[in-house]
Length: 229
Image (cartoon, rainbow, N blue to C red; front, side, top):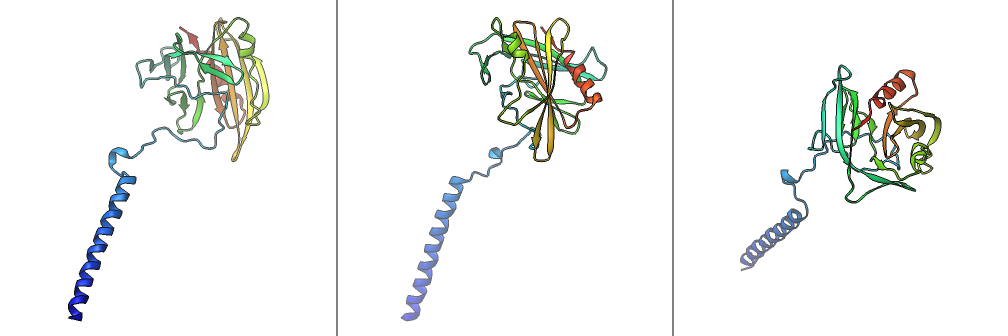
């Protein structure tokens, strides 16, 4: 009789363990969806050591991935590419810029090295390193041209001003400001270019690890191709 009771208890305990195991499996499957369709894929290269500029918003410039921007072979510089894009405008604020609701679209073009690639607002070189980005263009109010061209280093990121100079492009007024931002691995040097025709303001920031004439000449050449359509 005792043997029968023990057998019944063993069966009962086994059944309870199966029930508990089943409940646990149900709870886990409800919390963690490991199906292939739910696995996140990061397509953009990561550049953790490069500084974030608080004045550069994440508003998107749509490139060849959409119908608002086209990247083609440059007909102006051999081996380069040309970007043509139409993007919404922002307005100047004390902290940078802010999107204008239902704004008109601003159309521009520029040429850049053929080995570079572009994802949203960011350019990457042939080593997959972030080398440039385009902040949102702005619609300028009367009297704002000087304010736009006069870039002030960010206090938040301890940005140090190195040089500031006029940089006209074709018939547009422009400025070039070079700064320095310390990082864990050293420092980066944002080259902030701002171009305006008095009504619209266009910016592009190109990054370098060190200051050298060859790289500066390349950046100048890229920005000199900017055109408002």
